[in-house]
Length: 115
Length: 112
Image (cartoon, rainbow over all chains, first blue to last red; front, side, top):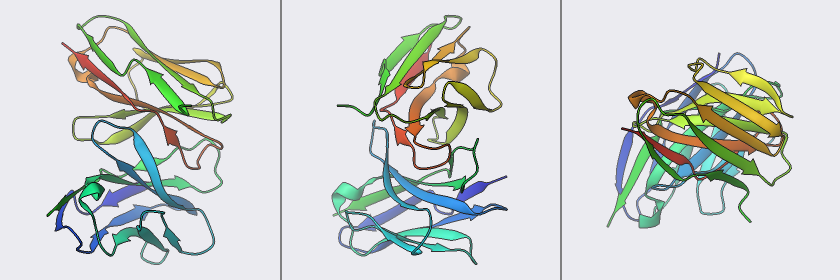
């Protein structure tokens, strides 16, 4: 069975500082990996995904994540955060190519950016 | 056009009542889901339907019954509501069973 561990429940950071949100997964088969962002009182929006190919994936707003198979990790990074990045971030995993499965989410990391 | 829409957005009801949450997607996706987000923001899969067929039915009380009249709709009916059912319920859809999911805005259910 798959599982996702987000190692930090809360990450406070100052504006323009770099940030890393950590995510580790457990699965016995190949996986697809996702990061979602949830702003207050809103639904989840896909930030970026890894399905195959290049292990480094990027989003349009400056976030990136790297799939590391040996360390079973998919950490999310941004070199310089903005106040508007304050949100809840969820890492998710699914069994690649396996029908009848759904995304399994980590418990989330609250990113708080202050000035 | 909203890709995944669910109604109502807020639902306050008394214990013991029966209520439904509706979900529609206009993305042409084959798979739809219901997730429950608890007060600690933990997201847990409840049900998954693929082309109107139930694929995933996690350990959920049988008071919860999903219904999919067609592949664009997946409604959630809850009987005999309990205080512990208070949560945010999210509908989602995806093109295939385990690829990226598109989420609705959520329905905040409060049972009093």
